[in-house]
Image (cartoon, rainbow, N blue to C red; front, side):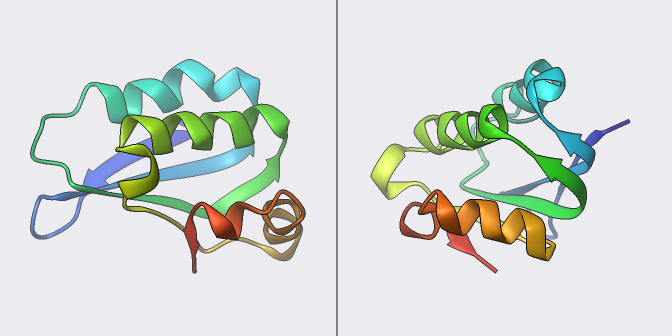
Length: 101
């Protein structure tokens, strides 16, 4: 499955892991990963360690997650990007909207 979720130890952080291509074909699965959770989630981590490709629709999906999580007050972290994915996020100025580790 290209998108998997898990809770961290405290149960307040939802980790969304994306494997392979992060593009429009994963749109519904990505939305389902965070929209069908419960209200105890306060932090989101998008783990891109297994992501091989990211396109503009994926950038839009990350923005939708940010809006869902509270907009400017959202606590969304993007982590474990490879150099190509990191470059796309940098060119798109996503480091101003997200914490990228």
